[in-house]
Length: 285
Image (tube, rainbow, N blue to C red; front, side, top):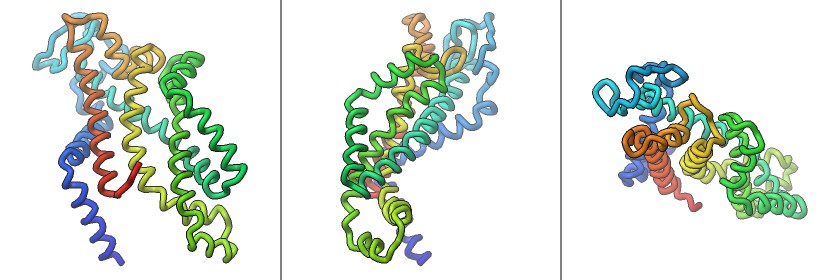
């Protein structure tokens, strides 16, 4: 049994490794995660992640001592970009921790029981999906006090909808299979069937969607921060850094360009990784 499992792992890795951009995406994602985790030890000026200032070195262009230059109060942009990775990953993690379980449970419930329960859940889900995510997030963030925590709540409040739809469609395709009918005839409880028998068939699709969604959440979070409805200064959120840097364009371009490139790197990394996982797990989304 273990031999077959090892062979399957090797086969899946071979399929993944054939997609060169996916391997690059994996390398990018792992590198960014390591940088984010060990940011206090890997950055040259860890104190610059907050309100610390150095007015003797304001608006310094990229150099050996400040490879991404410094901002309007003398903080090292490279240090703040690395800590910005941490906040972007934290935002994605919290939003998905909120959205994925809620969407999965609702999708399982709707797909398994059908009938009126399915109709009520799907109508509410459709109502939420009819509102563009950025508009919904902007509305919630505008009502709440703009900060990182409320931005997480705003995005988490809408993110469950896609997982409800995804899981429900998978459950509908297998709920009438013979093995499900056999389990019901044997008197196996609904919760056991839903979470022990049906849910494992959804994991591959959920995993791929989670990977691809991280890039989307990072973009939305950066957009909200750029508009002043997300993380507030001196928090080194990438969107906030871009917003502050625009006031000093085009002369002090590094304040905007490097945080923007960091977002681009994050998005490409997770999208390429997600594409590779989709091919490896043979998932259609």
